Length: 150
Image (cartoon, rainbow, N blue to C red; front, top):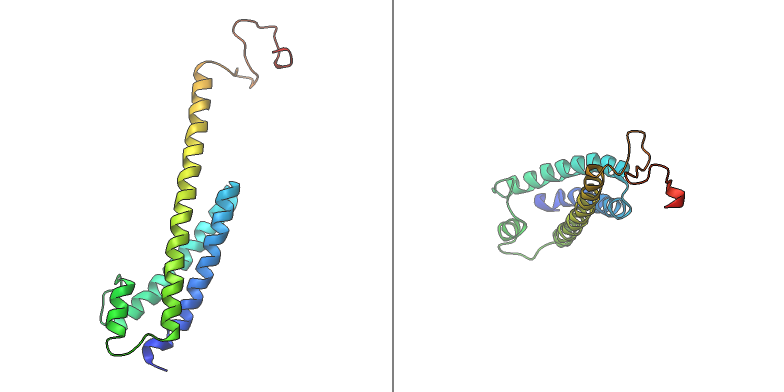
């Protein structure tokens, strides 16, 4: 096995694990599970660091900087030969991770918009003294009116 190709199975496995985390993140974002998101964020950060380290090692083997792009790595690695199966798998996994990351980014933006809208409603309601200090609805015009009779 080519020395370059030797590290690819491990990198590919880390990318596959990362894709699982991205799927879990998407489900947590869709369901609004903020506790799960906190845990996933830590796992995702660790996985990203591991992938970055392995990517940097791959780039170093090719004489490129650690932040070299996939096309730059491919151009350097396969000047006179076709990409290996492991390399093609790396490309597929990398592209899929980028796609899922973009989707999750959109889900995060949507969640932020919903949260912002909810905050605006609550801020507007609080400025009109909708709720009293005791947490009950206040009716400035009719103190004897309850929510049941509204």
